[in-house]
Image (cartoon, rainbow, N blue to C red):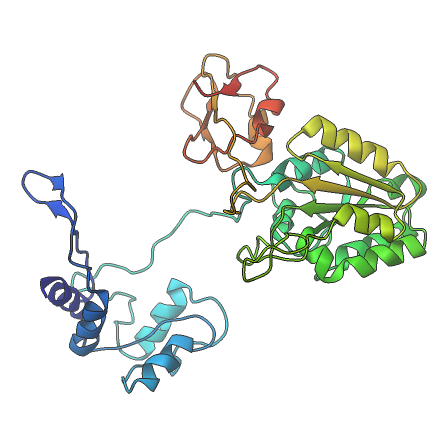
Length: 371
């Protein structure tokens, strides 16, 4: 009862914080049972709050469900249906209803609701199998026609390896068009990049047409065993149905051969030397070729699919601050500008997955397995 009462009081007074499970004196974590009946707390807050507004992006899904229970709430009457609900848009909407002052404050102390946050661009996960492949594409200065998936993040610095991204399956068709209008030497730089699920969805027909029209370009199929970008859904190449039942797994390499591709290679994207060798050789071919990367997404929780390797660490005595390891943009690698002579790199052990890519970039042998 106290937890629910405090929550209602804080909400009606403009907000605040409740710290649960910590003993006051002496300070000690003791745990809490305050939330054991969460439905009771929800109902209590619903009955006690003076204002009931459901804030959700896009369609009013929860709002309609709550109203269907006979509970009077507000939401889409003044909140937009389209676009991201940024703090600024929410403040403007609430201020327009007189819920908070026009100044953008909602607490009795006048504390501003807007906070200037540092820029945090989207990034591939630590240990993502796409990272090493895009690093090599950047190194080779390839002209990459991209597609829809996590790998679309390859267009961002420091990987910066994508020139086009139109719609699902467009990468292969775009590559087919690009090679028609560039010089013979530039043609060797064209690489279409597509994921396994997107390839199954609408890339197969593009590859078939590429072979049919004798297009001299390379297609890279990044097979990470899952539809990672939209929530780890299974697909025909994952070996499981959406109900998590085991089923036939489409063999992408054999499928490509059946479409008429004569040169199909499977590489380990965590091995930069192997990946670069394969790309160099296939990009030189005067006919359609396919490279398949074969390492799973780190978020696949199915037993036996993703195996976390030994963690890595950086020896501060050997690190020269050359920043070569930062060229892959791994979130596990931190730059400490105030350390050493000109700064040092550091690997966060809570984020490292042991993919080994960073070690291959260090020419000073400063990166090794954690002891």
